[in-house]
Length: 452
Image 1 (cartoon, rainbow, N blue to C red):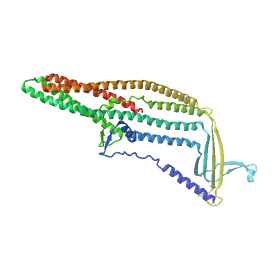
Image 2 (tube, rainbow, N blue to C red; image 1 turned 45 degrees about the vertical axis):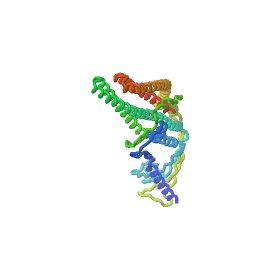
Image 3 (spheres, rainbow, N blue to C red; image 1 turned 60 degrees about the vertical axis):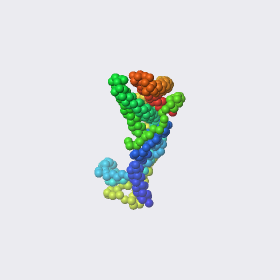
């Protein structure tokens, strides 16, 4: 019965080990929710942010890294549990050792007899259990792995802040370009009508070729602006698709009206704390734990082991499971290891770990100082761009009003074409100033909104 039990234990351990190391770790594929030729409507930046966090591929990577850190913690906690191994071994003693014994033992006093002890073949099978009772370095490693999970989570939050800032800039770039294309299409109609009017007046002899050339120059300038606005729109849309994890043939429609609302409702709430600073703080904590773990290398370790097995020795080759063929072999041991001298290796590594902690503290202090200065400048920039956008928008409206009035005067013959063209050029300049200031304001605002 005992022999069958030994065979059964050995078989179970073999199958268990094959199942443990042959199973797959469970990395699952990440599937996009978008299909080709879908059309996604975005009505606000908040809606864009929600879609971004859900579908951005970098977030899927950070989720996997968090899972990996959690498994690393479970692996580190393995020190708290005993390790149990099953073993089976056979040995062929090709030539047994000779031991000289007194001849009195074999009835030949005064002589020495060369005796051989043991059997030619020996087999051992059993279970070995070991447990770390005191191992300070491994215990601190558990704390390090816990903090690594927090570090990965903080890195994920910092990544969300980064991609929200990027998505906000591309969203507003595309939105401003879309608005600019609408304005510039009206500008081109006015410019074309002015060219047509100038051509008629040139035939009548009431203006010279210089006036017609200037009208055509204005029309060409608007065509260049339209091409540049279209390029900015395509650029913003392409980068939005990449951030939102969309296939290339998926369409995006921006339904938000940029109008006066984005200018008059510039919510300048207090900027949130830069989430990258939390990463530096966490690195300081981890560096402190790692320095403590390196120090504990010089501490004594205490462990215990237990062996529960059986042996079989025989002179002929083979293996028997008959009753009495296997003899019990068991022991328990307690091991205390005290490091005495390591050639100053551990001491140097500990000093290096302390310096690494100091480096982490200095990096955090430097990042905090830069963040405070940059955040203060960011709030000032937002206020200045807001004021400049409001002022340039008001000027743009006034120039538009002047253009309509001068167009009416030109059609009635009150002013000549040169005066009307100067007014038209001033209008185009005011339009460019407004769009540039609006772009600066909204891209700065996207950075502020990414902190919330």
